[in-house]
Each structure stands twice: as structure tokens, then as C-alpha cells.
Image (cartoon, rainbow, N blue to C red; front, side):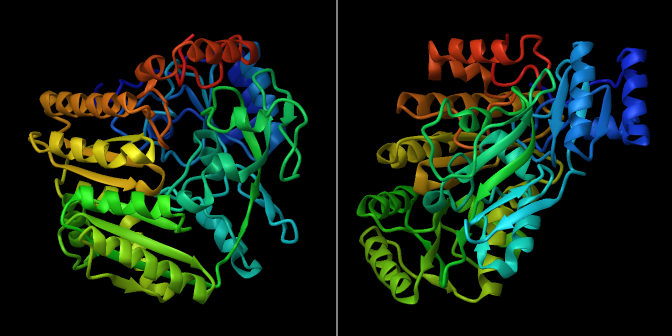
Length: 467
């Protein structure tokens, strides 16, 4: 691992390919150093690796022509949405052409009766929900960043609503994908279930651009709840907070959101978002439903929290107050960074079975006490997923080594509990080393799928599996 930038070299693409791409895209093909650097990095600490050129596409036809041209020269292509990934997903490991789909940002069709929508990949989650505002429907998947829908499908994104509404895996009905040879494939129809053939949609959701370029996404939508109530509640320690969540889930209460922030993260959030929460392990709750249903959920959750020492619920029922509360949660990463100006964040995430969550988090927090680095824990604890953030000094190699060691211990702990090395960030380049232990022989099957669909390894090479 290194945070030092890779020296930018001149474009290494064949002249004939560059001529073909310029004829296709004109000034929407860029080899400018600043543009290439921007498209060779995400929001992580992973070493930036710029592509040789960046193509700003505006249609499926342009993506097809570009992929065919690159395939003929065996040149890599790297899809790019908003660049908000956290495991080096967009780095150009072998150079090549970055396909920026941000210009493909149209909401194509909303079908309110069927509660679904088709969008181009560059549409962002906030843009989509703003478009849907007057329909009575919304799209619930909400990773902290305003990510593109195509990127969210590619990384199998989730977020704070996943405990009730699921992840992108459950909410993508169909994809249109440009394959490595330039064919346009639709992976499914809009029916809510099907037994017709292999589940190609689920194959491409989470494939991180290694099997094709997503050019259209059809999504499941949900009705905006009649009543929404949010709250925060501090606890005496992390175990008490997590045990509360486990009991809520096991009791079957259909809570919409339940998020954990440990004391260090709450302190950072208070300073950054100008809040006055008690500096203690804290749960953020949200309840959806009819007024009577929400009131029933609230009473049950308060009773359970009280059994574990949770008290002093602070409520946010107006839209303005709820937005302020959840914006504070969504900006937790930046709040932590603000605690150490000039530092960078090394963020790891794992997911374990819900019955092992309290054990995994408490062991991790105990482990972090011996670290000289500033660290925080946040978690989508309703589905067993949590994140550890370690702030590093980019000029101190020992700081980075410390973060890497913490990450390895967090992952080892999760795998020992039959968990996964990543619950939502994805593999990218950062988690490849852990896949063999997690998947065993199944990793070879993944390689065989990759070779079958992309024999020349031009689709975002160096991510998920190495051939």
C-alpha cells in the first residue's frame, strides 16, 4: 500500500486506436493530465493509477463502439461513475481507457403502477429521488456518497436503509450491459420474479465492471411511508448498543434504519455537524409505517433499549430535523477526517452473522484501544455490517502499516466468525488478498467465469480476481 502518486506517463495507446476514438468522440476524449489523474483515483487511500485516456460517453451506441475498438487492440476499459468507491475500483492498473458515464444521466421511464424505474448509469441516487419526489415513490438505497446508480449496481451498494429494504442485489430488476466484445445484453425483464435461465442480473450486480459496462438499470421502487420518525439513543458501552440491535432484529420489529456510532465517532460528528449528542456509543434509529404502526415500533424499541441501559431518546420527526440527523450520519467519514487535518482515511468494512456481531465489534474496539492512530467504528448493525476507520499520516509509512495491520485483524476476525471481508465496499484492489480464504474453491469458479466472458481481461483488470 502506498499513498504516493504514480508518476504520470504519456498516453501509451496505439495511434490507430486514438484516431478511431477521436473520430467517435471528438473533444470528449481527453488525455489531459488533470483529467486522467482525477479518473485514476477514488475516495480511498489506495495508490492512484491514471488511465491513458478518458472517454466521456453519452449513449449506449458510443459505449459499444468504444468497447469494440478497445477489444480489437486488447486495451483495458475502466467504467467510471462518480469516483466515490473505497477500494481502488477505478484505478487503471494496466492503463487503458476510462469510460466516464456521468453524461448518461437521464431517468428514462418511471412506471408508478409497477413501482419501478429505468435509468441511465450516470443518474445519481439524489437526482433519482428528486425526480421521483411527486410520485409518492422513492429509491431507498443510500450509500453515504451521492453515487451513480450504475456504480451502485456494479459494487452491490447498500447503506443505512438496507436492514429493511435490502441492497442493490434485491432492488435491481434488470440491467443492460455492454459485454467485452461489444454486444448489448439485457439481463432480465421487469417481472418481480422469474425462473427462466441463469440469473444474469445477479451475476453483473457486484461485478465491479470486470464483466461488462452497465448502460441501463431498472430498479424496484418503494412507497414513501405515511409516517417517519427518527431518534438517537446513547448506551453505556458498545456491547449494550449492539445487543439491543440483535434483540430488535430477533424480535422481528421491521425497523427501517439502525446505525451504530462509537464514542469517538460521535465526538467527531458533534464537532463537524454542530450537534450536542452525549459522547457515548449511540444508535441512530428510523421507523417507517402508518402512525399507529410507527408508535408500536417505537414503544417496543424503547423497552428493549431500556433493558440494555439505553435511555434519553432524542426524537426527530420533522423533515428538517430528520435530514439534519441523517446528514450527520452520512458525513461521519468527513467528520472523522476533520479530527486530524492533513490525514487520510483507511476504511475497512466487514459483515458477520447477527448473532456474532456484538462479539466481533467489542473485540475490534478493544483491539483499537492500543492503536496510536485516531480510529472510529460505525455500522449498519441491523444487517451485521460495520466499518472501521483509521486515520493515517500520508507522510508516515509506519502509520499506513498500522492501518493495514488493523484491517487484516478486522477481516481475520470476521472470517473466523463465518462473515465476509466486505459487506458493502466491495473488493476492488484492496480486498483481493482475502478472497481465497473466504471463498476457497469458489474463487476458481469466479476466475473461470471471468475468463469465459472476458478472455482478454480488458474489463477493469486487476479487480476482484487476478487471472
